[in-house]
Length: 306
Image (cartoon, rainbow, N blue to C red; front, side, top):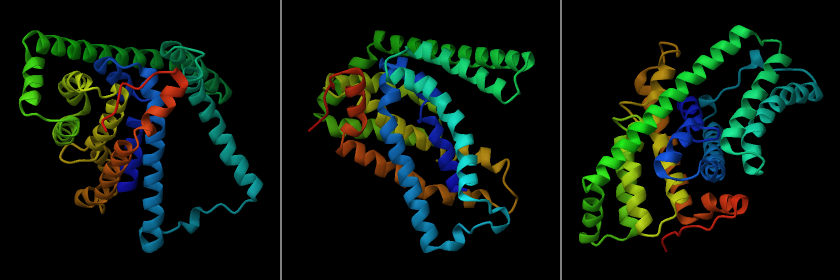
């Protein structure tokens, strides 16, 4: 259960991610920078998941027994063909969105249109395309877009009112009066984000924490992209930490009754620990998050604390 919950939650940060799209305007950071910047950390986190699963199944084989009834006994060539025929269309669709952004062929908006066209082409190739399907897709896209724009409007209103009432100055004065350096300040914001993930969903956390954190840390010379990547890693834990834990409750709705909620809570604990391992590596090696945006977009890092 922990493997399924953690693997499913990777979609919240791996591009194309709605969470990244929402975070971009709230933090004032280009969505292209965030999409590219989260690539290595996301793959690193997935690699940590795989390493942990392999090690655990090697030590305790009963935790991951093979299902002999579903083993495929065809030739290696046929197995490879089945895998490739399933993955190539998927990776082609991903490239039509992310590849065009990373190569500078399209803006994020244009890349979204490329993804829509690619999806229609794939639906035609799989012979599942129809006007009813296209209509449903349009309506769902309209609902999601309206939801995101409403959230962004609320976030900007909150940030504007907070600044207008002097809230940002109060927070900044607090950190200056406390004589806190960059690391304790960043630790406070990350801790607030982690604790808030127990009781709030990610959009509320973004609206409350990000405008203040970015303004304070930017004044200390911290790179916006670097902070946002670390924030995304921490915010992903909100999908796994009870009592909210959307990933756990989604899985509980489809899991067999013999799998208890307590078993799921225990199952995600190692993966939450892996999040902090990944976060520590990004803190120690900021280039994990900054190198690719610097290469792809020729941007200069805003600074990382020594």
